[in-house]
Length: 516
Image (cartoon, rainbow, N blue to C red; front, top):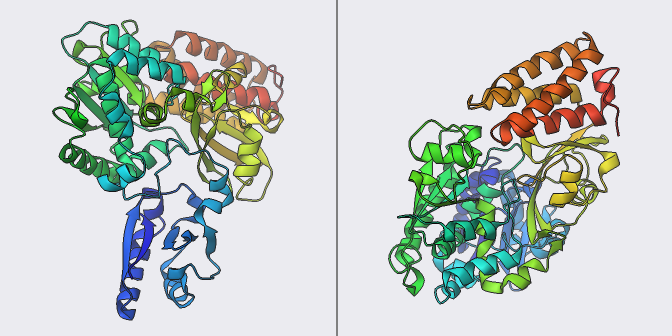
């Protein structure tokens, strides 16, 4: 009997030797004449345990990790192919606490299936949403997404169904679906995990969006820094066409829809939807003034829906299980689940998908296990390089769009970066301004000039030069950037700067902006 062994080919696992483990295991079993089948999956998202190797047993899949090449011989001697004991044995995968307490809707298949197997995808609930919408009217599909309460998972949190409805109602010779896969926020990797571990769910979500708004063409705008994700995505698109999920009369419906993969050059600002559209059109990635909105006048001047990877990957479960099922999860206006990415100085780094409402403290202390260094947590940044810094005194904040907005913060793409008590928050504030200066497209003055002046002023504060006056100047500068910038790059940079000053005044010397 051939035993199935699952080894991830996710970038995070490859970086710590997953390919070497697969090679070593193949050689070791060949020497012993043991028949096994190695399935290369995506990651489950338990990155501190990668490479995590799973073995299919009669009682379910048993995990071992982190596995190195030196562990292969002892694993085989200990009978791990039958789920036997070993110091690296983690037990049945579903019982690992980090996984057991999750609610996996969007990431239900990640780490379980062969990412490029259409049969695996279908066997684990895939394509049901697309088959259902084939018999629905476009407006019915849009209304289902509206009722689900799904909001953009890329950062803005705008209701996805409303965006689709706007595009559906817009007049245009042709309409487009654009997937923003330009995942550039620090501490985020959810988009990459989907593209590498379950690419068909993104394809299915885009096809449903295309039918819903009347689009026949889609584009995935991906990062050049994600070679493995792009390779997997390109291969998945070819398989989807063979399966009839893309092309003419998709999934037996009367609708045509196809997707093209485009690779960006790595500009952070191209994560902003209008700069992304400019880049897709072959121009320099610069922000457009709004209005007009892309849903009215987007790619090539036509109505365009621009959604993030996770937004689109959440659509198939909504259409297969129904809007009511999806909106049962969450709190307030934040419905469904959010894939939260724990990174930085944290013991249990990885992806944790859960319903909105869990507190920041639960995520950092309970799920993340505190710092990897063992030192006290001093601050966490939520929402990427433009997100606010939260001190421990705010760890009772629920993970919810409105709760974070009320504290001058943002959920963004769901990234949480943890810092221990050795962090210098004045340096972090300086970095935020420097990041903005480096990544600015240069179109608007508050972002282009304000960020450069911001670096200079924070340097003066750190050097003890007229601290009170320069702190007042930073606050004034942040107000100008927040309300005068064309896009979120300049508009959100004040979040990390002002939160660092407000919550950690001791790092800036005598401070006029007192901690609240």
